[in-house]
Amino acid sequence: MAMCRNCAPSSACVVPKSYYQYNVDEYGHVSGESAMMNEIYQRGPIACSMRADDAFDAYDGGIYYDQSGITDTNHEVTIVGWGEQNGVKFWRVQNSWGSHWGEEGFFRIVRGINNLGMESSCYWATPVEDWTVKHITTQEE
Figure 1 (cartoon, rainbow, N blue to C red):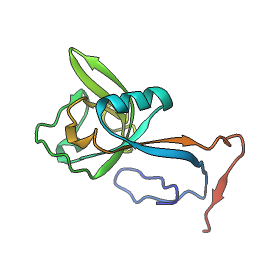
Figure 2 (figure 1 turned 90 degrees about the vertical axis):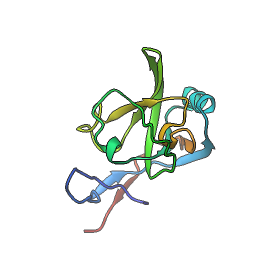
Figure 3 (figure 1 turned 180 degrees about the vertical axis):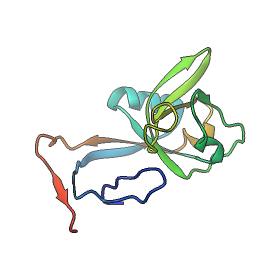
């Protein structure tokens, strides 16, 4: 998708009349717990594929652990960090479904076992350093 869209629950997505456009300088693939942690530490958040199903849709907090073993993916999210709670390692992840979902738009998922395919296909990117120049794209009505 080459343009910004604003989506709300239970309604159609719309293209804003204007929005800022940012560009990527370089990008690459990363997978596996250690490599992903290193990438986040070095350059910041990474985009990852995962499996989102009905059980995941109903997530409302805690460290998510899917026991189905499914790793084929159908959704993209952003891993922003990691942690450990009561001996359970987890990824801290931002979803695109709005702040009404999960833990204010974020969720935690078990780390180190490729749960829901989370550690199989991720990408890093660095922005073009021109954010002081406004790039506004205006859509025709």
